[in-house]
Length: 123
Image (cartoon, rainbow, N blue to C red; front, side, top):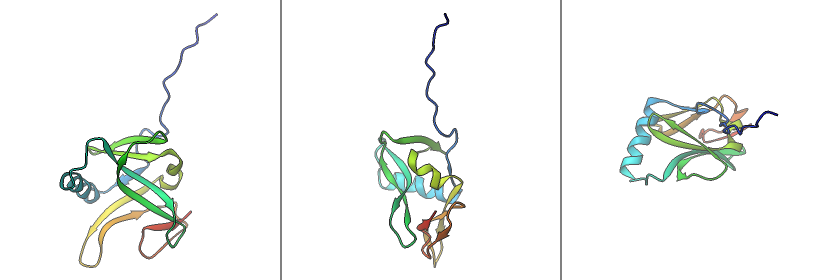
């Protein structure tokens, strides 16, 4: 009889399903420093119900939960709830710092429609 071995569980992705532009990474690193975010917190990227198109994006610093998968993007620790990944695969987060637009911008190829503010979508 052969001996059964337990395999180490693998994560859903080897690379993050969400990409960040250099401008977004620079702003995130600035926020981490200026807001003195504790080392125990990670950048949470996700979705929640609401917004004018049905779903809204989540982007903020939070503690890791059991349902989260963890990644690192250019030195920034990131977490995503496993259930949210299907809405976020292939999304790019950018940061705009212009006179008319300032803030994070979500470019999601999976969104069937988006609202004018760019922070909510339908899938």
